[in-house]
Length: 583
Image (cartoon, rainbow, N blue to C red; front, side, top):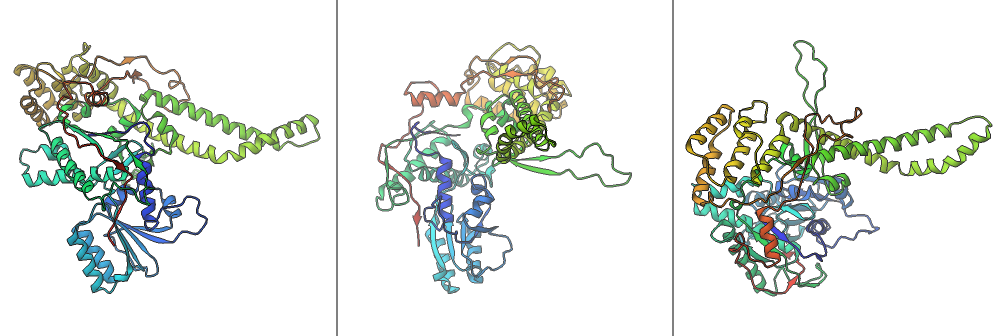
């Protein structure tokens, strides 16, 4: 787990900084001017899957076109030569990618080559490219080679992930496998450190590091500390010194980087959620700010013997540009359903007003009242027409969130996720349970086998005392009968024994949810959402273990949970980051 807390006065979010860095790269590593009147230089963008994942949440196809990108192609796809167009490459410096780039040089695919590496390229691989360019007589065509230090994916202004491709290689499971070798662990640690280093280069700040001792978090902290020190030691080539790209501005605001082992709080990622964004992430196919939905095929019966109709798949982008998403992503789901309905009613009212004005404009005859009404409404109609693009965008967002919220609601009702969420909240906050855990596990209509296993694991992790062997066998039988795989329980049982967590489970506060009955507006006959049987649970704020650790570190308070946070690098000047030019 990685937490980065910035001072309130931070100039630009990490999303803005990475977007600026990408635009500069696409502009041949020259700062991009927003209101430039000249035509952009038309070019081709070549990326690998890693580069695609970094760019797609930040830049739309339209924005790429505005930057002069006429084609964007995967490096390992079949590409035809375009000899009179420059090509901008954005790839990881892997052996396969270097070989393919050398092949492109030999085949003379493009007019010139601007090679940008997501992470720093090694000397030996750089020499391979140089040798290939020499052999192909294409040295003059390799215009620039840059290390971009952009090996992380920014999803929101204040949130990033380390990777999307091969993410299982740096997962909790990868680090905690009993058969992991030292070499594999070093590779995992180096991958994490490289991404964090790139993050701070892009942020243009040297962090203060805090980590828990004796865990993988400490290994990451030590390696990152060493990498930062080595870079700062070389003043001439340091990535944290001012230059023309970073406007040469000094900054003494130090971000706090908190590295915490996931074992400190295993219950939260298992917890069923009740907020819009978390539900979309949990129950739908949601990756890199894009949700993929399968449209229902409808009630039409296929003729006998005919193939069943394929379900259409639709993709929607849930980005910071979407105002409804930004406003409601952290809201409880029933509130979101109500807000979608309100937005829909507001849109219909505006649409009806435009239709009414159009009808008035079509009045005929010499009636003075009609002529007076016509002149009064001309200005209104003009205003309505001018706001038509905004109205159409509003309709698009309403349709988007109606479809997404409907898909989420189907999962809630089919799996009784409101019941799971309420029950798990009570378990984690040590409140009295109004229903037997065994009853929920044994209920064939309550959730999937995975839902039942998640619920029981939360109970097992949060319990002050582990259940007796007799009770545990009873739970195991119920879980097996429900179709659950018992391997996760076996792991958690061993983990709890090794971690000695039985006497001191993580505390989640004493807050609980309240059921306030069904929302009247959502229950209206004309509503898009039939919420019958779904509880309107009102959330109360509670601080999770990681939040409390971070708060105590920021306020310099002592806390049993954060008393082990010892590791830091000494204070030093912090400057805007720059890219390292290699050629």
